[in-house]
Each structure stands twice: as structure tokens, then as C-alpha cells.
Length: 155
Image 1: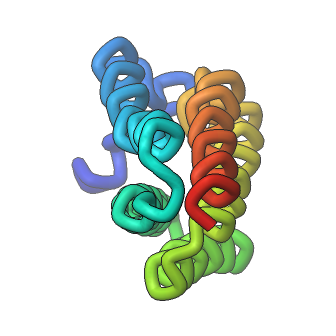
Image 2: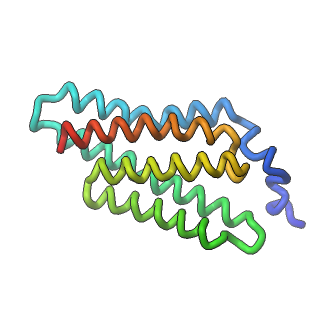
Image 3: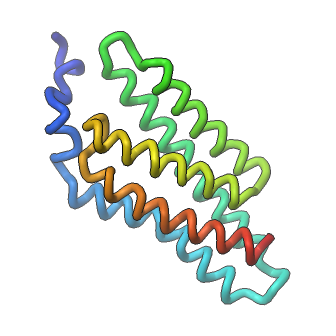
């Protein structure tokens, strides 16, 4: 067995090395979307399109990042990724690109909600760090609410 194949030797070892740093980075990733929701509430009506655009760019970037992480994990599996894993990765990636092209906070919110669900399930199955079953729904749920607010306020 090669060193690459032995990177993660057991599901219990997944995500244990730097949990504190991972949580900080995960929280930091939500800050631009939450700040955009605050900004859209403080801006006069009609001058919020730039905030909407920036929020969608950031959330679309997160979606494509999450898709890439899912794809990367399948490279370490014997025989490659299963059909469902590849379909999930493609779904998240396509939602990310479509939300960017359409500048749609609602589509970004739907994509992040899907990631929250998929990652929580993966955390329960020990296919992702165990803390994902609680952290991802809270982390991405806050983003979904912020993007919904941006959709309502900025149109």
C-alpha cells in the first residue's frame, strides 16, 4: 500500500488533526456573506446590486470549493468515487456556476443548503469529520438565511 493510500487509516482519524483551526476557517468563510446581509440592510433601496453580486461571487466560490473537496476525497478511495459521490460533486459544482452566471442569491442559498445536508449525512457516516453533522448545518444555515435576506432586499 502506498503512503497516499494510507493517509487516512480509519474513519475516526478523519478531521481530528486541526479541528480548532478547521472550525475557525469554516466560521471565517461565512463572514463575507453575513457582512453582505448586514450591508444590504444598511444600504438605501436600489443601491444594493453590488452587495448582491459580491455575496453571490463569494457563495459561488464556496460551492465550487466544496465540490472540489468532494472530488478530491474520491481520489483517495479504492476504485475511485462511487456514482452517487460523483453526482453530488457535479450537482454542487453546477449549482455554484449557475448561481454565479445568474447572479442568484436564492440559487446560492439552495446550493449551500444542499451542502449542509450532504455534509451532515457524511459526518454521521464518518465519511467526513464527525463534527460536520452539527457544524455544517449551523455554518451554512447562517449563510442560507443571509442569502435569503439579500435576495429579498436586493432582488
